[in-house]
Length: 127
Image (cartoon, rainbow, N blue to C red):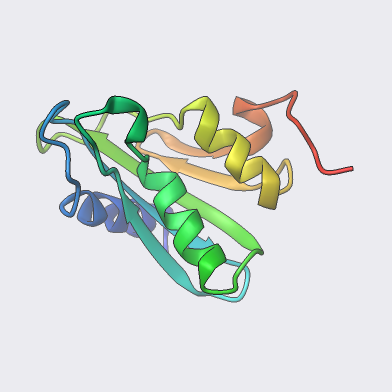
């Protein structure tokens, strides 16, 4: 699968978003090291702190299914159908990625492939 095809899966995952407050739809697709794919979307709540991002939805689905070795994640977000502006993961999502992924974990955005270390160079790590 190409990076573009992987990103398009994230765009498709954003269609499941529940975002009545922000109108900002986000989709994520997580690839495990053994080829399994888990999707996620953002799910908002009128009590904003109860909202969960697409990235954490995908990761938590994978972990709750017994998978903890991840290769890459693609993330797409938009208030329209234009997903050309990169949707960079928030700090909470980056730290969750850091729990399970190494520094070279790939993060695919609309502008290309990045590494976890590009966004979170100093992170909390397991002892």
